[in-house]
Image (cartoon, rainbow, N blue to C red):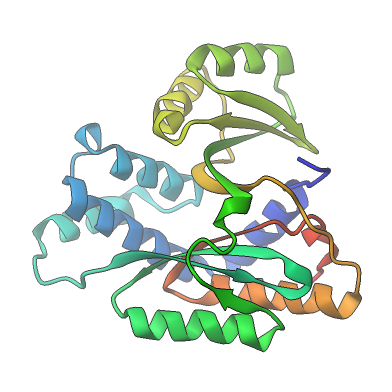
Length: 246
């Protein structure tokens, strides 16, 4: 992973989302609603919904909220019709950025995303401009504390994982995206507690930023993306993101 560590970044983001829980709930609620409309309200027969419910629980969304969103989406034919859009671009120093959005107004979201790139010294590119630097993979993260590495590796590979990595204070299990749900379920059934489990755009190479002004600009750009209700996730190949203190 080129020395890239997710742990302090995850902890910092969790501290932020604790203070912005309503925004996090709104974004995940939108994902649940889209999954219900695409595949129905029963997670047993809708793998995408099952994955989003797991993500919601990992982000401490109460079960009552989840059930209410599912029920509303299943019975609301007049609800906003969200579409999934991927934006690509470069941040300061050529950092590759992939932005996943769910929007009911493509023009608004595209304008916002372009503005964030421009404001902080980057530029939004065409489809395919940075995607070649990423692989789509399932990523399961488990905290190392109290976990036997050899046993977890054995259980993960037996369940069908394609790679097992250590990353600072985390175990990082990689899967094919289609295998993410079954492998997550198998590990949870064996008693492991997952920090997160989701499909990610994983960089094939990472890029450092050394100039403090560029570090600040890149950090601010990511914050702007994450604060936008239409943006569901942001992926990038910034190796030393931990140098940004916010």
